[in-house]
Amino acid sequence: MNLPTVFDFKQAVASLFIFFLYSVAPTLWAAEPLQIFVSVVPQKHFAEKVGGDQVKVESMVQPGFSPETYEPTAQQISALSKAQLYVRVGMPFEEAWMKRIQGVNPTIAIMDARDGVKLRTLESHAHDEHEANESTHEAAESDPHLWVSPRIAKQMAKQLADSFSKLRPEQTEFFNKNYTSFAAELDQLDQELTELFKDKQGLKFMVFHPAWGYLADAYGLQQIPIEVEGKEPGAKALTVIINEAKHENVKTIFVQPQFSQRAAEQVAKAIQGKVVAVDNLAEDYIPNLRKAARLIAGVESE
Image (cartoon, rainbow, N blue to C red; front, side, top):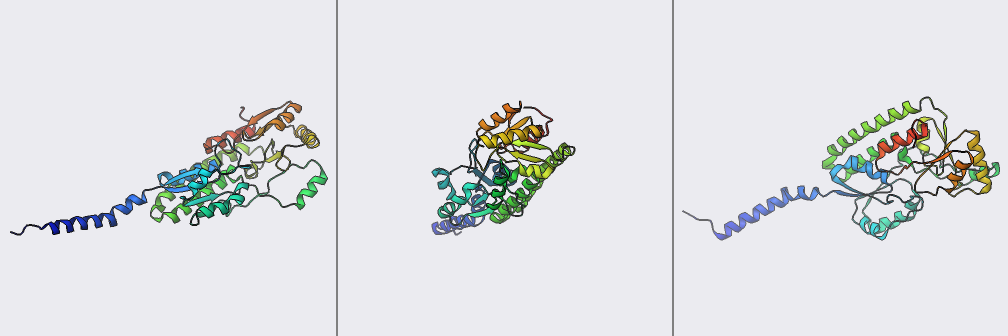
């Protein structure tokens, strides 16, 4: 009877180890979530809904900060060196920082959420005809607040499913299933808002910062901004805005918590109205957008 030698035993262990490397270990390695960066918090929600436990998502603009003036931190730039995907949306800071992001991580994939979206021009309140004519000759700034329309949010979610699938093809079915589920939630919200605004076509609502344009376009509304070229209005512009608010019978001024409320409060006082905060950057996307729409429609009070 031949007993196995020490050499045979070592060879068997080595064979088992090689089998583990080729069969079991890749599965464990693949279980590491994809490192994803997005520009604003609502995108983080979309990415997590589509990616599930296969993604770890961080928003560049943290809650409470304005994306109009944000500058990424050194810690975020360091974390970006390990990320597989950055999802941009058109915020001003992206132009200044995208080259630096690619500099620390040349292999990072870039997805532009604006692809396939009919972009609108960001409104800027003009306080007289001369200013309005001058502004038309300046380079029009595209509105980056895509996500406030559930219809565009659905497009953004599909882009995410496709991008995640390219990075992790073996999980394509998982990403598509998650997308389908999230898309159904967005369709339901779209139906609710269509019903909410069906008898309010042409409704004008006043905002400090024009962040609700895609929502307005989707449901036949019109936002009136207080902001003049990204700044608080001067005395002359403020007078025009107050007169416009009175003419349109506006009683509510909507503001984002990330912006100064001083000018909005001045207008509200002059028209004997009120200032109401609506945050288009909240992470609880569907309930937040539902509430914001109901406030704009005037069927819910703060």
